[in-house]
Image (cartoon, rainbow, N blue to C red; front, side, top):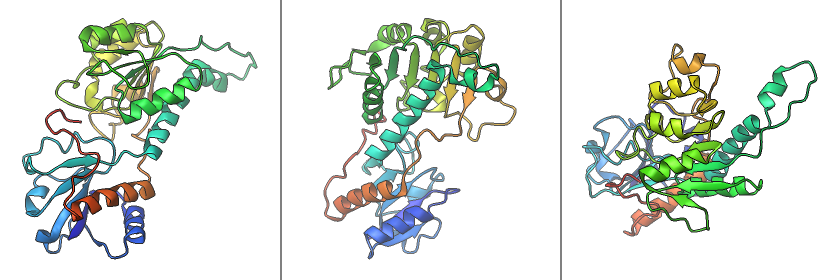
Length: 304
């Protein structure tokens, strides 16, 4: 029974070393070197090439090398009977929360303005911001915890309108607009599905308070780009922090790179830790070995 890593263009040497350290007898293969493809039952994938899963007749589970699964749930080469899972552990969630807090505090305390001003004129911070979270899965809940530790008001939006920790939650189209209207900082952590594609549009952006902050760490396709550019010029939001984009790497001539109120980071809000990824992947691998359902399987119809 073989374990395959499919991650073209990504340096997986640290991950491979952790997998071998934790499971010395592991039959580990790295695409495109498949060996006997009929022996491969588990694949750990990121940006898997089209058609690659069709070459793996004994495949039992595919795990995303990260929290997002949108590139895996609707592939014609991946049979519907094959479970799709993700590697979204506590380290990844904590790292994402740290990024969100850092970007929020930078805006809240006007640290960017203070850094570039040599006149020694302290600027007062903005009022303590109200935080709105689009998506309350594992990453969203960890972010809520981090913001609450700063005594900030936090509310969320999700499909069900419920949360386990007493967080105020909105749902539906009207609830989305209500959340935007009460959020000085609106953060997108949603999975990319047919229902969430383009969710950050002109209507939602117009509901934001003036001089607010938008942070997108979901997927680039959540944002209608020309709507966001027009909204920034109108001051709602006053700033956008974007870590994900429809085209990655973001082209040098893209308007986001030139806009004075856009902060661009190169998809680094939370980077997969090789040790945590290896531990999580091996836990799923062992379930496959004994014929048990793997943990963290997603609903391929809903897309998360």
